[in-house]
Length: 178
Image (cartoon, rainbow, N blue to C red; front, side, top):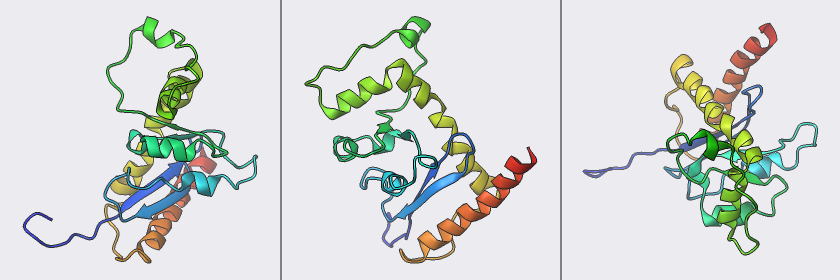
């Protein structure tokens, strides 16, 4: 911290199913931001049977780096790592124009960017921004969990999992009643 001292902080990550908005994987790391470590979501989701497992894995732009793209290329669930913040909305012509195929010599990040700019990639990526944010907002503002009470890399993940379970109870009530 500026002025000396140490603030013990963690970075909580959540993988959320788009349809149900249920948390399918959660992870806590001591890194203050996303890029230092590849998120373990793909590792936790890969062994699921096809009926339960995800079809696509979408991540925020914080995870898009050449190292992450190369590490995830051989994964059974190839992720769509958002390459950057979304800019101004494109014109209709730009939005529905076919970007074509990526050249064979393109680096992994260029291939990923090309995949995201296809019509299928855009259709997959469109709901990404509105999937995790409502879950985080509900946990922070409705449930009042803005920070964890425990300390230490052994205890914090357990408390994070308990918060996710409590969220699931609230969400399942809505899904069953709805």
